[in-house]
Length: 191
Image (tube, rainbow, N blue to C red; front, side, top):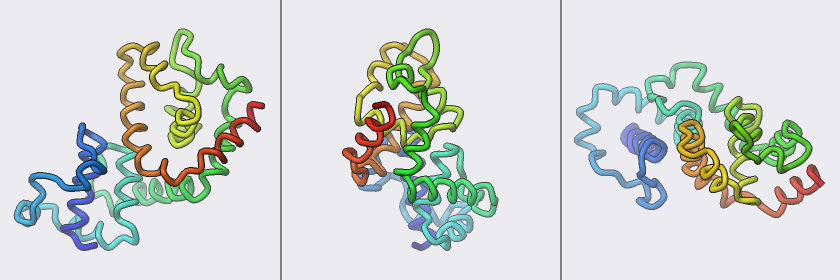
């Protein structure tokens, strides 16, 4: 990947997570990301550094998921590399991480999903990062509850932000997830 490609990747991912733009629907194509606009940027050197990473696309994705305000100039910051390494670990051991996340939840599945007076227990775990957002996404695929939460948490800003992020992120990994395997993990845990 060269610096211009890193720029287009960054702009596409950034726009995917911060607007109504869908990087999959438009196949990463964006207006105003032509080579001429890239050449006039003062920060193009940062994209050069970003392009030298082993997997710039995953690095950008992991960091935008962690912080929507990620900027390519942060590539020299060791925190961004730690975020990427932690994200990679989750991806490489998603089955194990999913099972560990289930252990953080209440023993009755419904108690994790119910909205009583405040945010549901599972949502609180995800917000505190005690449970990964991937686990919440997979559980929603198995037993859809997002619409229920949206109805019960009427105009809750925090839930809307988490929902948007999870729906945008879901498209990056859900097709490679064996839902039958995760269903069995869930059934085994909650029995």
